Length: 388
Ligand code: 5AD
Ligand code: SF4
Image 1 (tube, rainbow, N blue to C red):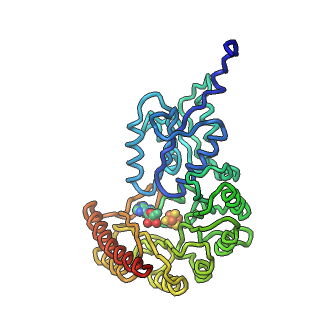
Image 2: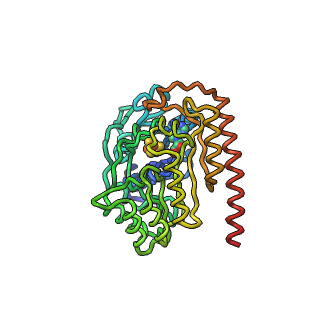
Image 3: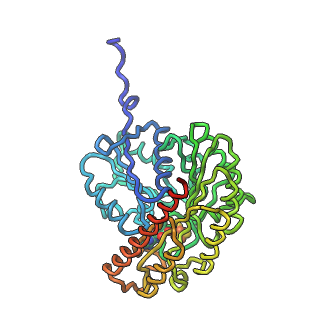
Protein backbone atom coordinates (compact mmCIF):
# COMPACT_ATOMS: atom_id res chain seq x y z
CA UNK A 1 0.00 0.00 0.00
CA UNK A 2 2.03 2.96 -1.28
CA UNK A 3 0.00 5.66 0.47
CA UNK A 4 0.24 4.16 3.91
CA UNK A 5 1.45 6.64 6.53
CA UNK A 6 5.04 5.88 7.47
CA UNK A 7 5.30 4.39 10.91
CA UNK A 8 6.58 6.77 13.52
CA UNK A 9 10.22 5.84 14.12
CA UNK A 10 9.76 4.84 17.77
CA UNK A 11 7.17 2.25 16.80
CA UNK A 12 9.59 0.03 14.93
CA UNK A 13 12.92 1.14 16.28
CA UNK A 14 13.74 -1.30 19.04
CA UNK A 15 17.14 -0.40 20.45
CA UNK A 16 19.50 -3.38 20.61
CA UNK A 17 21.15 -4.25 23.91
CA UNK A 18 24.16 -6.48 24.44
CA UNK A 19 24.93 -7.72 27.96
CA UNK A 20 28.39 -8.95 28.92
CA UNK A 21 28.54 -10.80 32.25
CA UNK A 22 31.50 -11.21 34.61
CA UNK A 23 31.60 -13.14 37.88
CA UNK A 24 29.49 -15.73 39.61
CA UNK A 25 26.21 -17.51 38.84
CA UNK A 26 24.36 -14.81 40.75
CA UNK A 27 25.52 -12.36 38.09
CA UNK A 28 24.51 -14.76 35.32
CA UNK A 29 21.01 -14.80 36.81
CA UNK A 30 21.00 -11.00 37.25
CA UNK A 31 21.85 -10.60 33.56
CA UNK A 32 18.91 -12.86 32.65
CA UNK A 33 16.67 -10.75 34.87
CA UNK A 34 17.89 -7.59 33.10
CA UNK A 35 17.25 -9.21 29.70
CA UNK A 36 13.74 -10.21 30.79
CA UNK A 37 12.72 -6.76 31.94
CA UNK A 38 14.29 -5.09 28.90
CA UNK A 39 12.49 -7.40 26.46
CA UNK A 40 9.21 -6.61 28.23
CA UNK A 41 9.99 -2.91 27.84
CA UNK A 42 10.44 -3.30 24.05
CA UNK A 43 14.22 -3.64 23.77
CA UNK A 44 15.93 -6.27 21.67
CA UNK A 45 18.71 -8.40 23.13
CA UNK A 46 21.53 -9.04 20.66
CA UNK A 47 24.41 -11.48 20.66
CA UNK A 48 27.37 -9.19 20.01
CA UNK A 49 28.62 -5.80 21.10
CA UNK A 50 29.21 -4.79 17.46
CA UNK A 51 25.51 -4.75 16.53
CA UNK A 52 24.37 -3.21 19.84
CA UNK A 53 23.15 0.36 20.44
CA UNK A 54 23.53 -0.13 24.18
CA UNK A 55 26.16 -2.22 25.97
CA UNK A 56 25.62 -3.29 29.56
CA UNK A 57 28.56 -4.76 31.46
CA UNK A 58 27.46 -6.72 34.53
CA UNK A 59 30.46 -6.69 36.82
CA UNK A 60 32.17 -8.51 39.70
CA UNK A 61 34.25 -6.99 42.52
CA UNK A 62 35.28 -10.12 44.38
CA UNK A 63 38.92 -9.83 43.31
CA UNK A 64 40.96 -7.00 41.78
CA UNK A 65 41.63 -9.09 38.67
CA UNK A 66 37.89 -9.24 37.85
CA UNK A 67 37.68 -5.45 38.08
CA UNK A 68 40.79 -4.92 35.94
CA UNK A 69 39.27 -6.99 33.15
CA UNK A 70 36.13 -4.81 33.18
CA UNK A 71 38.08 -1.51 33.08
CA UNK A 72 40.07 -2.74 30.14
CA UNK A 73 36.94 -3.99 28.31
CA UNK A 74 35.01 -0.74 28.67
CA UNK A 75 38.16 1.16 27.76
CA UNK A 76 38.05 -0.64 24.43
CA UNK A 77 34.46 0.50 23.67
CA UNK A 78 34.67 3.78 21.81
CA UNK A 79 32.19 5.63 19.65
CA UNK A 80 28.50 6.26 19.67
CA UNK A 81 27.21 3.41 21.84
CA UNK A 82 25.56 3.93 25.21
CA UNK A 83 27.55 2.06 27.85
CA UNK A 84 26.28 1.02 31.26
CA UNK A 85 28.25 -0.50 34.10
CA UNK A 86 26.04 -2.52 36.45
CA UNK A 87 26.44 -4.98 39.33
CA UNK A 88 29.03 -5.16 42.09
CA UNK A 89 31.58 -2.71 40.66
CA UNK A 90 28.81 -0.16 40.16
CA UNK A 91 28.00 -0.38 43.86
CA UNK A 92 31.68 -0.35 44.77
CA UNK A 93 32.64 2.75 42.75
CA UNK A 94 29.27 4.52 42.39
CA UNK A 95 29.62 7.83 40.47
CA UNK A 96 33.43 7.54 40.64
CA UNK A 97 33.03 5.22 37.62
CA UNK A 98 32.50 8.33 35.47
CA UNK A 99 35.87 9.77 36.51
CA UNK A 100 37.57 6.49 35.73
CA UNK A 101 35.98 6.09 32.30
CA UNK A 102 34.22 8.94 30.51
CA UNK A 103 32.58 6.54 28.04
CA UNK A 104 30.24 5.13 30.70
CA UNK A 105 26.77 6.71 30.62
CA UNK A 106 25.01 4.92 33.47
CA UNK A 107 25.96 3.08 36.65
CA UNK A 108 23.47 0.74 38.35
CA UNK A 109 24.06 -1.29 41.53
CA UNK A 110 22.79 -4.87 42.00
CA UNK A 111 19.76 -3.84 44.06
CA UNK A 112 18.73 -1.20 41.46
CA UNK A 113 18.70 -3.32 38.29
CA UNK A 114 14.90 -3.07 38.05
CA UNK A 115 15.36 0.61 37.10
CA UNK A 116 17.36 -0.17 33.95
CA UNK A 117 14.42 0.03 31.44
CA UNK A 118 13.46 3.43 32.85
CA UNK A 119 17.08 4.63 32.59
CA UNK A 120 17.43 3.38 29.02
CA UNK A 121 14.12 4.99 28.06
CA UNK A 122 15.63 8.30 29.14
CA UNK A 123 18.74 7.80 27.05
CA UNK A 124 16.85 6.68 23.97
CA UNK A 125 14.15 9.36 24.08
CA UNK A 126 14.50 12.68 22.27
CA UNK A 127 15.31 15.74 24.32
CA UNK A 128 17.16 13.90 27.07
CA UNK A 129 20.31 15.80 27.70
CA UNK A 130 21.42 14.33 31.01
CA UNK A 131 24.71 12.67 30.20
CA UNK A 132 25.30 10.56 33.28
CA UNK A 133 22.86 8.58 35.44
CA UNK A 134 23.64 6.51 38.50
CA UNK A 135 21.33 4.45 40.70
CA UNK A 136 22.95 2.73 43.64
CA UNK A 137 20.67 3.27 46.61
CA UNK A 138 17.84 0.72 46.56
CA UNK A 139 17.71 -1.57 49.59
CA UNK A 140 15.70 -4.21 47.70
CA UNK A 141 14.48 -5.56 44.41
CA UNK A 142 10.80 -5.89 43.50
CA UNK A 143 9.74 -9.55 43.40
CA UNK A 144 8.23 -9.27 39.92
CA UNK A 145 11.61 -8.95 38.18
CA UNK A 146 12.14 -12.65 38.84
CA UNK A 147 9.04 -13.63 36.88
CA UNK A 148 9.69 -12.49 33.29
CA UNK A 149 10.36 -16.07 32.21
CA UNK A 150 13.67 -15.18 30.54
CA UNK A 151 16.27 -17.97 30.90
CA UNK A 152 19.52 -18.29 29.00
CA UNK A 153 19.25 -22.08 28.71
CA UNK A 154 16.37 -24.08 27.30
CA UNK A 155 16.17 -26.60 30.10
CA UNK A 156 18.09 -25.11 33.03
CA UNK A 157 17.21 -22.18 35.32
CA UNK A 158 19.08 -20.35 38.07
CA UNK A 159 16.73 -19.42 40.90
CA UNK A 160 17.79 -16.91 43.55
CA UNK A 161 16.65 -17.92 47.04
CA UNK A 162 18.43 -15.20 48.99
CA UNK A 163 20.20 -11.96 48.18
CA UNK A 164 23.16 -10.33 49.92
CA UNK A 165 25.23 -11.69 52.79
CA UNK A 166 25.64 -10.78 56.46
CA UNK A 167 28.60 -13.01 57.27
CA UNK A 168 31.33 -10.43 56.78
CA UNK A 169 34.17 -12.83 56.11
CA UNK A 170 37.06 -10.42 56.57
CA UNK A 171 38.35 -10.67 52.96
CA UNK A 172 35.01 -10.42 51.20
CA UNK A 173 33.42 -7.43 49.49
CA UNK A 174 30.01 -9.09 48.94
CA UNK A 175 28.25 -7.76 52.10
CA UNK A 176 29.29 -4.22 51.08
CA UNK A 177 28.15 -4.40 47.47
CA UNK A 178 25.14 -6.72 47.72
CA UNK A 179 23.87 -5.60 51.12
CA UNK A 180 22.68 -7.66 54.10
CA UNK A 181 21.16 -11.12 53.73
CA UNK A 182 17.53 -11.03 52.55
CA UNK A 183 15.52 -14.21 52.05
CA UNK A 184 13.06 -14.43 49.21
CA UNK A 185 9.59 -15.55 50.23
CA UNK A 186 9.22 -19.28 50.08
CA UNK A 187 5.99 -19.11 48.05
CA UNK A 188 7.65 -16.83 45.47
CA UNK A 189 10.60 -19.20 44.98
CA UNK A 190 8.24 -22.11 44.41
CA UNK A 191 6.09 -20.00 42.07
CA UNK A 192 9.17 -19.06 40.02
CA UNK A 193 10.23 -22.69 39.67
CA UNK A 194 6.71 -23.78 38.68
CA UNK A 195 6.62 -21.03 36.04
CA UNK A 196 10.03 -22.15 34.75
CA UNK A 197 8.93 -25.79 34.56
CA UNK A 198 5.83 -24.71 32.62
CA UNK A 199 8.25 -23.16 30.08
CA UNK A 200 10.18 -26.40 29.62
CA UNK A 201 12.84 -26.06 32.32
CA UNK A 202 13.75 -29.44 33.86
CA UNK A 203 16.88 -28.56 35.89
CA UNK A 204 17.28 -25.84 38.49
CA UNK A 205 20.18 -24.37 40.49
CA UNK A 206 19.17 -22.61 43.70
CA UNK A 207 21.40 -19.60 44.38
CA UNK A 208 22.47 -17.67 47.47
CA UNK A 209 25.74 -16.54 49.06
CA UNK A 210 24.96 -18.83 51.98
CA UNK A 211 22.04 -21.07 51.09
CA UNK A 212 22.18 -22.88 54.44
CA UNK A 213 21.08 -19.72 56.25
CA UNK A 214 17.81 -19.63 54.24
CA UNK A 215 14.74 -19.02 56.37
CA UNK A 216 11.24 -17.83 55.59
CA UNK A 217 8.03 -18.38 57.46
CA UNK A 218 9.35 -21.42 59.39
CA UNK A 219 10.82 -22.95 56.20
CA UNK A 220 14.57 -23.53 56.54
CA UNK A 221 16.89 -24.61 53.73
CA UNK A 222 16.37 -28.33 54.27
CA UNK A 223 12.60 -27.88 54.12
CA UNK A 224 12.96 -25.78 50.99
CA UNK A 225 14.98 -28.59 49.38
CA UNK A 226 12.18 -31.02 50.20
CA UNK A 227 9.57 -28.66 48.75
CA UNK A 228 11.54 -28.20 45.53
CA UNK A 229 12.08 -31.94 45.20
CA UNK A 230 8.31 -32.42 45.30
CA UNK A 231 7.62 -30.07 42.38
CA UNK A 232 6.04 -31.89 39.48
CA UNK A 233 7.91 -31.74 36.18
CA UNK A 234 11.26 -30.83 37.73
CA UNK A 235 13.83 -33.55 37.04
CA UNK A 236 17.03 -32.44 38.73
CA UNK A 237 18.33 -29.65 40.96
CA UNK A 238 21.35 -28.42 42.86
CA UNK A 239 22.39 -25.36 44.92
CA UNK A 240 25.24 -22.90 45.54
CA UNK A 241 26.91 -21.95 47.94
CA UNK A 242 26.97 -23.66 51.32
CA UNK A 243 28.68 -22.34 54.42
CA UNK A 244 30.33 -24.75 56.90
CA UNK A 245 29.10 -22.75 59.89
CA UNK A 246 25.46 -23.36 58.90
CA UNK A 247 25.68 -26.89 57.41
CA UNK A 248 24.38 -29.78 59.53
CA UNK A 249 23.39 -33.44 59.52
CA UNK A 250 19.72 -32.75 58.75
CA UNK A 251 20.89 -31.00 55.57
CA UNK A 252 23.17 -33.90 54.53
CA UNK A 253 20.29 -36.28 55.15
CA UNK A 254 18.16 -34.26 52.72
CA UNK A 255 20.91 -34.50 50.06
CA UNK A 256 20.86 -38.27 50.53
CA UNK A 257 17.08 -38.66 50.59
CA UNK A 258 15.91 -36.42 47.78
CA UNK A 259 15.85 -38.25 44.49
CA UNK A 260 16.11 -35.16 42.26
CA UNK A 261 18.90 -33.47 44.19
CA UNK A 262 22.47 -33.79 42.85
CA UNK A 263 24.73 -35.74 45.19
CA UNK A 264 27.36 -33.05 45.43
CA UNK A 265 28.37 -30.35 47.87
CA UNK A 266 30.47 -27.24 47.39
CA UNK A 267 31.72 -26.39 50.88
CA UNK A 268 34.30 -23.58 50.87
CA UNK A 269 37.11 -24.28 53.33
CA UNK A 270 39.23 -21.16 52.54
CA UNK A 271 42.16 -22.20 54.78
CA UNK A 272 43.37 -25.29 56.59
CA UNK A 273 44.61 -23.35 59.64
CA UNK A 274 42.54 -22.20 62.63
CA UNK A 275 44.49 -18.98 63.12
CA UNK A 276 43.78 -17.90 59.53
CA UNK A 277 40.14 -19.07 59.70
CA UNK A 278 39.76 -16.85 62.77
CA UNK A 279 41.32 -13.89 61.00
CA UNK A 280 38.97 -14.59 58.10
CA UNK A 281 35.98 -14.52 60.49
CA UNK A 282 34.71 -17.81 59.08
CA UNK A 283 33.05 -19.07 62.25
CA UNK A 284 34.38 -22.67 62.24
CA UNK A 285 37.58 -24.56 63.05
CA UNK A 286 39.45 -27.13 60.96
CA UNK A 287 38.20 -29.81 63.38
CA UNK A 288 34.57 -28.77 62.85
CA UNK A 289 35.06 -28.74 59.05
CA UNK A 290 36.56 -32.23 59.09
CA UNK A 291 33.74 -33.54 61.27
CA UNK A 292 31.21 -32.06 58.85
CA UNK A 293 32.67 -33.67 55.76
CA UNK A 294 33.03 -36.93 57.60
CA UNK A 295 29.26 -36.90 58.26
CA UNK A 296 28.59 -35.80 54.68
CA UNK A 297 30.58 -38.70 53.26
CA UNK A 298 28.97 -41.20 55.62
CA UNK A 299 25.43 -39.99 54.89
CA UNK A 300 25.73 -39.16 51.17
CA UNK A 301 27.68 -42.21 50.03
CA UNK A 302 29.70 -41.43 46.90
CA UNK A 303 28.71 -37.73 47.08
CA UNK A 304 31.10 -35.31 45.36
CA UNK A 305 32.86 -32.65 47.44
CA UNK A 306 34.35 -29.41 46.12
CA UNK A 307 35.78 -26.34 47.82
CA UNK A 308 37.32 -22.84 47.61
CA UNK A 309 40.75 -22.00 49.01
CA UNK A 310 42.41 -18.59 49.36
CA UNK A 311 46.22 -18.58 49.38
CA UNK A 312 48.37 -15.74 50.66
CA UNK A 313 45.92 -14.29 53.15
CA UNK A 314 47.73 -11.51 55.11
CA UNK A 315 50.28 -12.99 57.55
CA UNK A 316 49.89 -16.59 56.24
CA UNK A 317 53.28 -18.19 56.93
CA UNK A 318 54.97 -20.78 54.80
CA UNK A 319 54.31 -23.35 57.52
CA UNK A 320 50.60 -22.46 57.56
CA UNK A 321 50.43 -22.69 53.79
CA UNK A 322 51.91 -26.20 54.04
CA UNK A 323 49.27 -27.09 56.66
CA UNK A 324 46.58 -26.13 54.14
CA UNK A 325 48.31 -28.32 51.51
CA UNK A 326 48.36 -31.22 53.99
CA UNK A 327 44.68 -30.79 54.68
CA UNK A 328 43.91 -30.83 50.96
CA UNK A 329 45.83 -34.11 50.68
CA UNK A 330 43.92 -35.50 53.62
CA UNK A 331 40.42 -34.47 52.49
CA UNK A 332 40.85 -35.23 48.78
CA UNK A 333 38.32 -32.84 47.28
CA UNK A 334 36.95 -33.75 43.85
CA UNK A 335 37.75 -30.19 42.79
CA UNK A 336 38.98 -27.00 44.44
CA UNK A 337 38.91 -23.41 43.21
CA UNK A 338 42.13 -21.79 44.37
CA UNK A 339 42.33 -18.00 44.64
CA UNK A 340 45.17 -15.62 45.39
CA UNK A 341 44.15 -13.27 48.18
CA UNK A 342 43.15 -9.89 46.80
CA UNK A 343 42.64 -6.95 49.19
CA UNK A 344 39.17 -5.43 48.80
CA UNK A 345 37.98 -1.95 49.77
CA UNK A 346 36.11 -1.57 53.09
CA UNK A 347 36.92 -5.10 54.24
CA UNK A 348 38.53 -5.91 57.61
CA UNK A 349 41.36 -7.88 56.00
CA UNK A 350 42.36 -4.91 53.87
CA UNK A 351 43.49 -3.26 57.14
CA UNK A 352 45.85 -6.13 57.97
CA UNK A 353 49.47 -5.76 56.98
CA UNK A 354 50.00 -7.78 53.82
CA UNK A 355 53.74 -8.46 53.60
CA UNK A 356 53.57 -11.36 51.16
CA UNK A 357 55.00 -10.54 47.77
CA UNK A 358 53.04 -11.11 44.58
CA UNK A 359 55.65 -13.68 43.60
CA UNK A 360 55.19 -15.64 46.84
CA UNK A 361 51.40 -15.64 46.41
CA UNK A 362 51.83 -16.90 42.86
CA UNK A 363 54.19 -19.64 44.02
CA UNK A 364 51.70 -20.85 46.64
CA UNK A 365 48.84 -20.62 44.15
CA UNK A 366 50.67 -22.78 41.60
CA UNK A 367 51.73 -25.32 44.22
CA UNK A 368 48.16 -25.94 45.43
CA UNK A 369 46.81 -25.95 41.88
CA UNK A 370 49.28 -28.70 40.91
CA UNK A 371 48.52 -30.66 44.05
CA UNK A 372 44.76 -30.43 43.54
CA UNK A 373 45.00 -31.25 39.85
CA UNK A 374 46.72 -34.52 40.71
CA UNK A 375 44.07 -35.40 43.32
CA UNK A 376 41.17 -34.47 41.02
CA UNK A 377 42.58 -36.60 38.20
CA UNK A 378 43.07 -39.64 40.42
CA UNK A 379 39.53 -39.31 41.81
CA UNK A 380 38.10 -38.91 38.32
CA UNK A 381 39.78 -42.13 37.18
CA UNK A 382 38.57 -43.93 40.32
CA UNK A 383 35.05 -42.59 39.77
CA UNK A 384 35.05 -43.68 36.10
CA UNK A 385 36.35 -47.14 37.07
CA UNK A 386 33.63 -47.50 39.69
CA UNK A 387 30.99 -46.62 37.10
CA UNK A 388 32.38 -48.98 34.43
N1 5AD B 1 40.53 -12.57 47.54
C1 5AD B 1 40.63 -13.82 47.03
N2 5AD B 1 39.58 -14.66 46.95
C2 5AD B 1 38.39 -14.23 47.41
N3 5AD B 1 37.19 -14.84 47.48
C3 5AD B 1 36.30 -13.98 48.01
N4 5AD B 1 36.91 -12.82 48.30
C4 5AD B 1 38.21 -12.95 47.94
C5 5AD B 1 39.34 -12.10 48.00
N5 5AD B 1 39.27 -10.88 48.51
C6 5AD B 1 36.96 -16.22 47.05
C7 5AD B 1 36.50 -17.10 48.22
C8 5AD B 1 35.05 -17.33 47.91
C9 5AD B 1 35.05 -17.31 46.39
C10 5AD B 1 33.74 -17.09 45.76
O1 5AD B 1 35.94 -16.25 46.08
O2 5AD B 1 37.22 -18.31 48.18
O3 5AD B 1 34.56 -18.56 48.43
FE1 SF4 C 1 31.64 -13.38 51.14
FE2 SF4 C 1 31.74 -14.91 53.34
FE3 SF4 C 1 29.36 -13.96 52.46
FE4 SF4 C 1 30.65 -15.87 51.06
S1 SF4 C 1 29.83 -16.08 53.15
S2 SF4 C 1 29.67 -13.98 50.22
S3 SF4 C 1 32.78 -15.32 51.36
S4 SF4 C 1 31.07 -12.72 53.24
